[in-house]
Image (cartoon, rainbow, N blue to C red; front, top):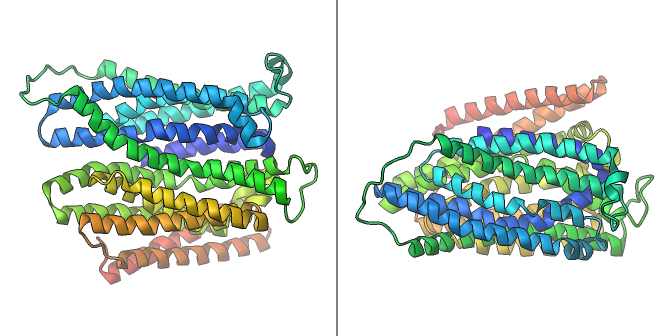
Length: 517
């Protein structure tokens, strides 16, 4: 979790300056590349670490240590081939997808630049799953840190270099007429290099890992059986992640399509033409509102990864008490993190966005209310990640797929209904509805499948404490603003006062309510 916080901090350190450099239209090119990359990446990579971790945890529990090494080697052979295919798919679809999504091929370069990330992501995912299955989260943590550092340094440097030499670079790409597309492609190349950095970390780690002699175990799984088990576990997880990432594609298609057809209510900022309006709104929403929205869920996603081996062992041994304990701890921890973060961002959204994006005032202004409307969905998503990990741990790897498919349908319907009425706010409303449905259905599915019950009283204390946090932060912000306090000081003072009120309220209610565990 510490690593996830650091990685997200580095991600924000990359994405926020990048948005300030590219602006709304430039970020639409960048986000278009991510929109095609993430579904392919999700399908080919996301389920790998879960599958390898699950098989590794099972073999470790049975003392089949030689089988663990065989799982790792088989996974590398299988999924390196998958990674090559995924990279080639993105590369070949770069221009057609760009034309279909935006009506031009300006973002095609950015899409092509991100293609190799799938291969390096597959290699990294296998290594992370290998160590996570042994309940060793340090390699995952350190590789995430390496990935984040490379992304910030390489991405921002390359983007800045492309901006200063855009004319020279555009000579090599005659089909590109917008210099912002060159800069977006350079920023995306930094993302690709970050995946190379993570893979290089594990290559270095393998040089220092002690070599163990073969144990000559009598029972080793056949490689074909291992490959089949890996695919059986990884495919549903990958497809469910694919469905999850289709929400980004839905946002791109529907925001651009609906605004092109129905226009933008409230008018356009000065300097933005009607032709640029769809890309401007989409780039602002994806580059600003969703960037801030995704900060916290990535942290609680690590709770899902961390609880998976423990849930798998408890389920395999039939220990319902331990299963209930691990489940409650993961969900409660996710709620403790998510609720105050969501309340704080909702209350302080104008100050936060204008501080983070000072050079993109118009883009930030569009996203102030959208960010507030995204916050209920953020809480639901934060709680859904551990639930997905638990469902996978008890052998229900296909359940998240079905649940995410339902949520995606809600997202699509919501976008088509609300975006014509409220623009970017409509995309935010449908996102929150989507994740609320996902949380409700996944919680019900897990409780029924695991055969356990979870107490809801501790979660009420978190919600009430979150309301105290929001009230204190809002009061502090209003008073600070009235006396002319600077924007960053408003944020810091409000966060300190709201955080103190949250912790004090949570500790008081936990102590007096008897829910300290």
